[in-house]
Image (cartoon, rainbow, N blue to C red; front, side):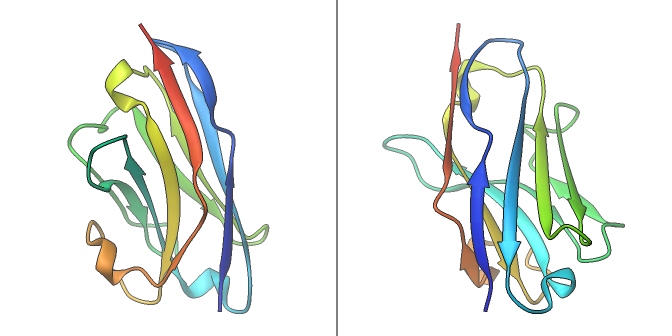
Length: 123
């Protein structure tokens, strides 16, 4: 069982940056792969980034490559998403998720989800 809580969202201007954080609680967190997804109003959930339990492998959606960075600190039970060079189209609720496997971009492969944090980018 894993509980996830996101934070760090906010309102920023285009070109700005934020650091989103996901705090996890529960046993064996370090053995879970972690992912970030986002969902804009009226749109389906969209994959953003994923990281394996070791932190050695990452996977990004093409739309965020070169701008977003996923990382984790297993000692602190946290996962972060550094979002740079933000664009208005990045506006969405961002969710973190945990998986006991390596589903990468597939949301059905994730077992646990946080409540989300809002990111709004103005032009």
